[in-house]
Length: 168
Image: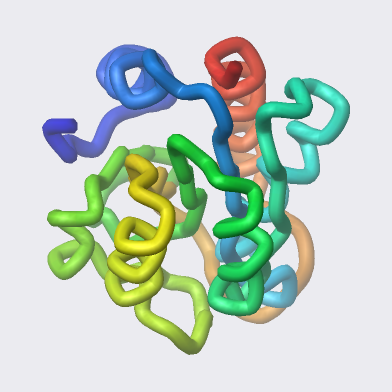
């Protein structure tokens, strides 16, 4: 994973294909606050994936507390974990970036979860042995309010379509 910010198509598709190439059991966790507009893009994507993936994919709407789902993630015994979260990438709204756990310290998330993702991921790597990555998406507006901006709705739809094709 190069960690370059990219639009939905192109490098991000290639990076996801490489990440998921040997996936057998995948956790996809949407992170974000539904009361902070585009911060909820991860949760929106997971909701849209429901009914579009196999039983080898465990979809979780973590909202702001991904640490509350550690036990159920471990019990699922995933080979791969993909966290989807709004992130300040310094790019155009809707841009996305696949970040490996080794790069998390340099990519702070916008969402308001209590446990830093770096610690959350480190614990899951140690307990599951799964490959873990964060799909960060540049928000347009993370202010108070409900619903995604039009730009992030489009990004969420595109990423949902892409993931539904790539997940096992």
